[in-house]
Length: 276
Image (cartoon, rainbow, N blue to C red; front, top):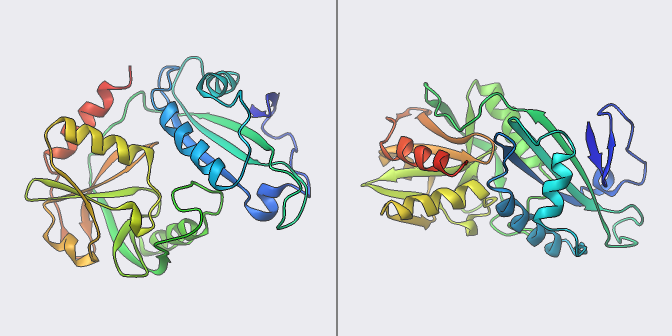
């Protein structure tokens, strides 16, 4: 089932209209989040980013667009129990071309079962490479908003698949580390947790911020900054984060090799403690 503006439809039901602004212009936002045994422990973090993105796109936020409302709308899809991956889309109502006729939002929610009831660390580390064909801009008018315009990440994903890797590192136009095709980047050096700053042009993930907070709560020093790709040659450990998979450790970046640093399972355990 899918939930379109509060009404349930079978997932094969045709909903797309020719004047749909999400389809024609990418005029919208989305969030991907996990449901654990019917609970949504990080929903408020996703909505905070979503509402900020709506303001950036000049989308009006109705008074009822709040945590309780979206929790209820997600539960309509049968997520009251069990483990799910949920996608929440919010986009501008139809009308207009580049200049919209209105700023009213519509929403579409879909859910699919997820096989894991908690975040798990994979047994084998990820194999990464550098993607030279995609460069992220360090500034855009929609910086920080998770918009439907995801072509850089699509092209990067195709690239790393063609190379036989699990993911790839993306840099900005200044050559600074930014993120990967579908996750934020962390590396450990001299027992300090490093992560690229938001000013590099990355999408600041909800999981990224949560990991920063968990690390600081464990008295782990966290440094946000700008570094060239070569900085990873001296890293003692590397891991990636996103809202669906949590934390995934990296074993190699082309010819550089890494071990699973003790910070990685520690932070994963602290993350799982928050689920219930």
